[in-house]
Length: 232
Image (cartoon, rainbow, N blue to C red; front, side, top):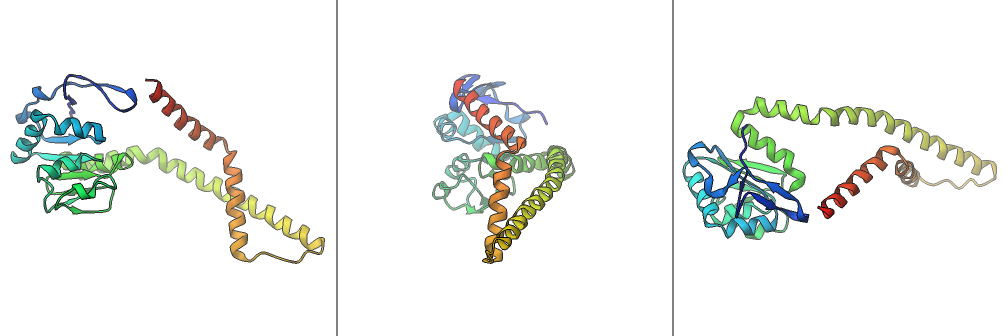
């Protein structure tokens, strides 16, 4: 799929946290005839910019009237509501903005398509939203293939982590069993019920996971990414 990123007010766009994005063209340079889908990004700042740009708003209106797909994610579906594009259609948006969606039929999901209109809930729904957009343009087979490719590594990790989790839980249960035997040997026959035993398993499991190297890498990558954005 050929994607063209259009900027408002120029081609070097400063996004959240000072991140700069180089657009392919200005919104004034877009050609309706060569457009199959218009996708509106989220973020309140971006939404305000689009709403304040007559050229962008007119292009969205014309694209919808010409039968193009219109997609929006996060706060951007509220733009479609203002243009009455989502009127009577199933839609989703960032939680808390539902009151700005007019008479859209709000759906609590990651992404939803109703005819030529596709909406996504938030950044965490970007994969589901993107796959719906791809399916609309290239068909279900293409979307399924991309979905299989992007979750392949995740499935591999899930299989790996399931084995590791069983070993961790088994080790924790053995540890608790030895503690119970030690208590019994000392004459302490007071046993917790099953619910408390289960809670103890979970508590000790999280204690072990906190020191697991994989979780250390996850936390470091997340923190490092945030500091990188803040320094940009």
